[in-house]
Image (cartoon, rainbow, N blue to C red):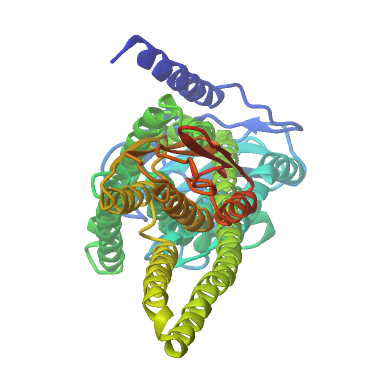
Length: 611
């Protein structure tokens, strides 16, 4: 790798590394709750094999101390968590848990104050959702033990985050302040995903809008799932949990569909095979979830179902991380190579990846959880970046459609001019042929001369028709074919009269000549050669043609004896006015110099894309 390439890599990769470090650091910053809110960090726990083995008065000896956030470890079917509430009374107090990982019951002292789900409690089977839990505490409960009895089948087990104790109003106010941006971003991502389908233009480009829709909806559901505010607005915890399960694989599938269309979809492109891997793993993930839920509802197999569920979700998390790293590598390559779309995508994707890595670390217990997540900031940046890219592609397609429409209209006008020209040219030649035929029939003495003229006019008519048919074939018209036809026609015509023919060509383009220009060029070339051959005792005709950016130049030279033969040579006869008229119609000019050597020069401007 060259030094410049390494510098380009470093220049684009370094901000991503800084963003990841900053995102992880944000998760460890001191919390900033306001009001009379206290963190309950010091707890103790025990694991038992029967839910009735211990009561709320289980003794402290034998318990293991734990500082939250953390997850207990050990064997058992029931987890008991206990702490002592602060001695300061709190009006309308609650203990808030980011989530309790499984069905549970909560006790203050000997009094049961909450059952989830109600009324099944620990007997509940299957998914129950992960809502924000607010355990009510009475005004006389200050200093009392708070005990949670939790189903320990789930891993990790226990609770998410750090429990908080304080007035309900303060906790809800803090949740509103903390989660409102996340909720808005989540809903905005879902809405933008739906709006992205508006740009669904054709079957050939469906991956871009559909991928954006899947991605936007999935990331929006993911962000909303990790808000507490949704549980204050409505009881949607179970629906949110199912949405989160579906969103996990859909995020990768949607993003890769989008990238495959944006950056190319050749069989060897990394986005295509990575998409296939994600689809296969998503299928295995769905099958594993089905097996997990069947086992959870079966007698004696609930633990196996939990293991299958944990395996499926952790596998899809690892796939997301692996896919993200492959995508990051490929996008960095494209950005370092100067791809503007890659640079726009990298800006949003890099921020999302930074905060997502922090959240994945939290899911594995290596970083603090839930309310410290800022993944919505990265999600917003990535959704906006992808929306910009979608809009750029939509505008490009729109401009291309307008260009094609303008090109079709221009070709239509050219064809109309060609038909008019054909009518005028062929019509005049055929009229002359008919008149000569009539003269030959009436006057036997002039019949031979009339037949010779008819033969000449017929040859011209055939040349006109050949030129017209060739210019109508838009797909086959090219500068190379145009030059080959001119060279063939010129050599056959000039050499048949015993003269030498030379043609030098300079092409600075591999595009196609405009249709009208192609026809007029053939006619000017043909008329010029015909006039050159009328000059007596000529030995050669030299032609030079150059198609350069912005201009076409054709020069023709011939020698011969012009003495006593006025009106002969390249610029002779009534054809000169016709040639100049054709040049003027193309926006160019034609000049003729007559001396010992006659020289014709045609200069015509070329539109952009023609040369």
